Structures are given as C-alpha cells and as structure tokens.
Image (cartoon, rainbow, N blue to C red; front, side):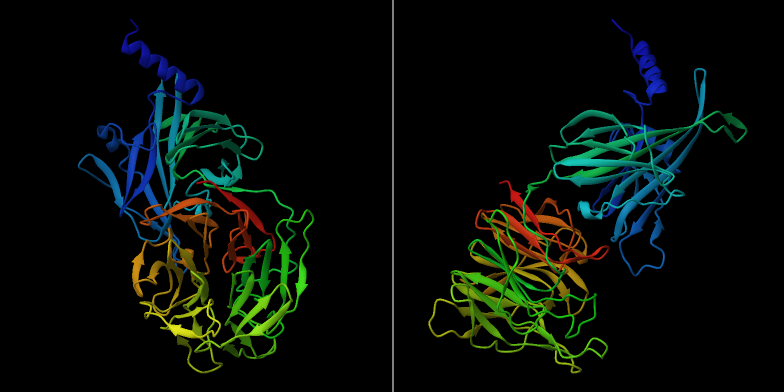
Length: 541
C-alpha cells in the first residue's frame, strides 16, 4: 500500500513540475451577503481554517460601481476570527481583488518567490464582468465573458494578453478542466450547471531577485477567479434581419402578426433633444421573409418616450414628448396626450380619445383586451415637471373607448417597463422622482384593483433604468442596461439570470415573435452608443 508520505511527495513533485497539485492551496474571494470570505484552498470553498493565518496579511480591495465616487478603489481590512478570514463588503462593490506576497520558498532544489492574486465580482450579471485592467493592483488577471453557451476566460499579464499560460477550471459541471491560453490569452470552456466556478492561472517570471536577504531565481504567480455561474437559458439565433437604418432610443416598438413595427424615438446624442433629432418615422420589417427589408409606413408626429402596443392585429400609439426647439436652441420639451390606432390593412391612423393628461417616459401593456398605461411624467417646457401618480386603463373591446383610473400606484417612476404576465401587470425598474434609478418591481392585480411589491431585478439601480420586458411562452423576461436577460422564477419570488445580449443596451425593446422567439431592437450602450443591430433569441423552458 502506498504510504501517505509517498503520495504527498508525488503531489509536491507534480506541483513543482506543472504548477498544478492535488493538495496545493490558492487564495479565493467569495462575496456573500454583507461580507467577503477569503479561502485558502484548492477551489472557491472552505478548507482547513488553521491555514488562514498564512494569508491573513493579504491586501483586499473593492472597486465601486458608484460613478460619483472620487476614489473608486477602497481597501477592505481583513479579520481573522472564529476560523474565518473575512471583510465587510461595501454595498456598491463591482469587483473585489486581492494580492499577497507569500515570500521566498524552497522546495527541494527549487527556490522561488510565491505571489497570490485573486478576483471576484460583486454581481452575477455578465455585463458587469469587466477587467480591472490595473497591473499594479492585479498584474495577473482572469476575465470572463459569455459567448453563447461557452465561457471565454482571458488571461492577462501586466495588462497584456498572456499566451501559453496554464489555466484550470473546476465546478459547474466541469471536472478539472485544463487548457493552455492561445495567442489572445484565451481558453474556452462550457459550464453546464449553476454554482461557483473556480478558475486559476499560473505565470512564471524568470527574473531573479531578493526578498529579506533571500535570493530567488524566479517568481511564481497564481491568480484565481471565483465566479457565480448561471448557464444561459436563452440562445442567440442566426437571422437575416437587417440593422436599423438609424440607431434610436426611447421609441415605440411592437410585433403584430409576422411584422415588427417601430415608431418615433430619438436619433440624436444623449440628453439633448430637438426637432431635428426626433423622429416621427414609422417602419416595419417582416420577421418571416427570406430577405426582409425595412418598409416605410405612414408616420405622424415626432415623438420620444412613447409607448406602442399591438392588439388584434392593430397598433396603438400612446403619449410621448415633442421637442419644440431647434437643435441650436434651448430645449423646450412637451409631453403629449395623443392616442391613436394604426390599421395595417388600410395603412391609416385613427385618432382615439386622448389621455387624461400629457404623458411621456411611461409604458403600456395589454391584458385581457384592456390597455394599461403606467408611469412617466408631464414635461411642459420651462414649467415644473410633474411626475405622474396616476395610471389608466382603456377597454379596447368596447366600441366607445374611454380612459378609466386604476388604483393609485405606490411609486413615482419613469423610464420603466410594463408587462402583462399571469393575469397581472408587472412594473419594472425605472428612474424615481426621489432616489435615482431603481430595480424595484410593483405588481398590479386587476381583479383586486390593488398593488403589491414583487422581487427586484438583479443588479444595481441602473439595471432597471430604461429596461424592457415582455411575457413569452408563459415566462416573463426583462433585458437590462448591462445586457442581462432576466427571467422571473416559476414561483414569482425572484429573478433568475437567463442569458446575455451580444450588444448590451437600454431604452430599447424586447418583444415576442409569433414563433415564440424574442427580438431585441434599438437602444444604446453607455460605452458604445446607439445599437443598430437586431438580436433574435430562443428560450428554453
């Protein structure tokens, strides 16, 4: 029988040879509710607590996602007590990093300096998995990115892609996955299960040196990545849909039959509106044609921040605001009370009873043949802006259309989304009159004419700003600013990560197709600007 001493010797020999080990320890960061746990083990999980004292002097920090912060990086003091090594977690942490110089070690005839690095993200949203990109803090770094069902890990050394490094990945259906980085510093794996993914990379620097009088011929660096994984439930579908002719935001979008319709919106730069930058264009595209092309339809008033919904093959346009100023003049924005129906059969618009008050930056949805309008505000030039505390319903089944009030919403929000799901209406996210952007969810029950609060979207407040939502095949989906596609759980108690868009965007539209797929159109990214490309997704149950 092989003795434990022989087995241990074999493990050490393997570690010295290739940098992997059956009993080696690495430093891991695992964010938890209100704190950050530091582990010294083979994977992102606890091991022998007696070993934690060896890394208790590690330097832990967090980078905030608060754009108002003067200093985005914050040092987090570590505390070793009750067999745990941890730190208090700041609420706005986007990413955590750690460095620790373990010192000069001697293993047989080998002598080397050992340095540990670690990284973890404060959010499970893939759109927020951004490289730290600061070599002085994290010279060896692994950065993840979903590309469909595959996870791409990019290794960088001193800020540059690192070719030929050994990477190991464990967990989430991967059993000791090992690979060597390519010319771009990448390895590709395919996690199949939800959980914590443990990835690590090794780099050897043959530059000799000396620490505390101890010479060393090389430095061995290990960097870990702890990653909360949710395998994608949505899949990108190849399509022939052409891009928008012009990128646009805050427009109306709807699917009726086999056609996707878009109306109005904003063509100009962020936060600046004018007659020239607004649109009254109305277009559609076939979702089933072999060679679809955008088709111009009879338009109407130039509107931004409007809603467009489909019902029984017709389109309904609700509200929005009009810019009365020229491009080089002071802004003069006015919310509108217009309500109109478009009939694709005759290609004509019909004016309908106006909204009870001008409204823009709202949303609308149809449930059981009734059109609901929620959220938004009333812009009136230089007058004080009124945030709406009303919501309305119009029964489209009636020959004499009229607007009736529903129970007063328990919020003042705009730039939100509204979706009908399981007999109720879900109001997601938006900008609050007081408190900034929000991921809050409010639920209206028409049977009770009452509001309740639902589960918030995943992520920080900006994830709710300019989001879009719709129910498809009995599942409520929402897409958010970072590109996340989120799905309401079957019990309605929480949101789950369903996937990631190829082009993150907000102030866009997520819409269902007649075939049960999802089309994403329009919107903009805070980093790349307006997005012209359409995306088509399929959803597994």
